[in-house]
Structures are given as structure tokens and as C-alpha cells.
Length: 308
Ligand code: SF4
Ligand code: MG
Image 1 (tube, rainbow, N blue to C red):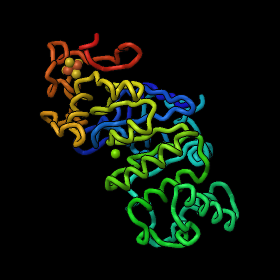
Image 2: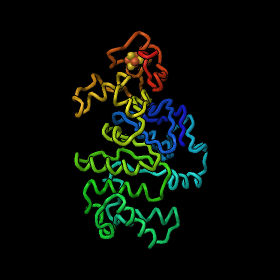
Image 3: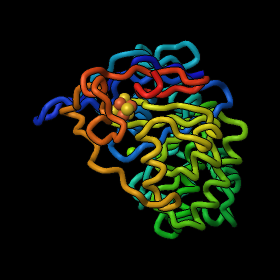
């Protein structure tokens, strides 16, 4: 369904060129739900934006992104607009800024349906109410008339999910759908994502391992702009191969809160060799000089010389 190969995204800045995404390869099959995990600033959101071609104007993109065989970066504006709404849907990050405070929620869900799918106002409003119902908002017709400030954090997230589902896309990219939610609210959102993902192809960008484990079929780990490990979800949660992945899992509250020493390299000034070598306990001579390729290890992939 989606095939990304050798994708590079760079941004020119005053301090130098930011290499946000370097040489990313990934493919997602129909009905697969892939999770993309990694700490903030590792390039995962930029990758999501590149797929929907929502990057800022000056981003430089190399490589290829094929969606059902079509090269996304060579589509004209009109074809891209169609693809973005109906085929590829987005569940945006941060309900605080993605919802307009002065427009009722129902209308915010209905408007894109009127604009992109040419639905009549009454039909679009009906659809908005049924979408609110689908994301388990109680009293949806009453709630549709309310403003974002009348919604709790969890309800706002549900409203964003409803907006993402509105054009009935085949493929959905969700960026940090559980960010900033407290534990019980998060559990319910995870449950909802699980229900939705049953019949959809999805890419879920998250720093939350619970989301990756409960909702995703496969998981890719990003570090300093690269994918450094990719595996079916059950295998990734059974055993992490890359030293960074292991460290990342152990650094999270549920798994011991043991921080990885050092910090991620600057995307402007990346180290030679393995991008993790300055922090790695297993660093060997060649790790300082050579850049490790993706290595196949019993059907899963890892970018580390320990498996060469
Ligand atoms: Fe560590 Fe070397 Fe593997 Fe990089 S390639 S993660 S430095 S062992
Ligand atoms: Mg992000």
C-alpha cells in the first residue's frame, strides 16, 4: 500500500542544514498497522508529514514515496488534494492547537466534508454527529454544537480522531494520538484506536510503547533521523536487538526509568559512523568509522554491526 524508499528530508537553517530524515525505507501492507516510535526530535513526525506532503515549503526531499504505486511527490496539487482527504487521512497532533476555539466541534468535522467531498451542509452535519457517536462521545447531537473549551482533553482527542475518519480514508496517519492524556483517558483512546485499526491501514507515530504494543502489528524505531530497527510488534516487545531500542525501552517509566547516557546528536552535525556510537556500550572500532546498513536478522531488521 505504502512504499517509502531511501527518503531524505532536509531543512536549511541559519545554523546549517538539518537532516531530519535520512535514508528511510519502509513499507506498509493493506490492513497493517505500523507504529513508529522514538524520542521527540528523531524525525518521526517529519516522516509522517513527508508522506502527506505537508512539509514546509523549503524542505528538500529525496527518495521515493509510493502510495498504491503513485509517486506522491510528483502528483499535481489537485491529485494530491484528493489523495490527502479520501485516501490518506490524518489524525493530527495536539488537540489544543488543531481545533479552532471559536467554531463548534460538529461544524469543524463537517466543513472538510462540504469542502472536499461536496456534501450538503445538513448531510455533513449528520455525518459529523454519527462520527462523534463512532468515537464514543455521549449525546453526540448535543455535543456537536459545543465548542472545544467545553470538551475534556480525551474528548478533544476523540473529536480529532472523528475528523481524521470523516472522509473514510483507506490509510490513516496518526501523530501522537495519546500525547498529554492522563492514564485512564489514554486507556480509552488506545481502545478506540484498536477498534478503528481493525479495518484500516495505519501509521501511528508515538513515543508511547503501550500504544505500539496494543495497537500495532509492526514497529519501527527511529533514532537521529534513521530507522534503526523494525520488527513485528510481538517480536519487538519480546526482545529488542538494537542497543538504542533496548535503552529506549528501559528508559520509560513502565520499564525502569533508566536513562540512556548522553543525548541524541544534533541533526545538523551528525557523528560519523553509527549515529548511536557515542552513547553505545558495545561500540567497536568500525562503529566509529562506518555507517551500519540495515541487517537482516531472522526476518527482522536492525542497523547495528553486532548482527553483521
Ligand atoms: Fe553500538 Fe556499533 Fe551497534 Fe552502533 S553499530 S549500535 S555503536 S554496536
Ligand atoms: Mg513529534
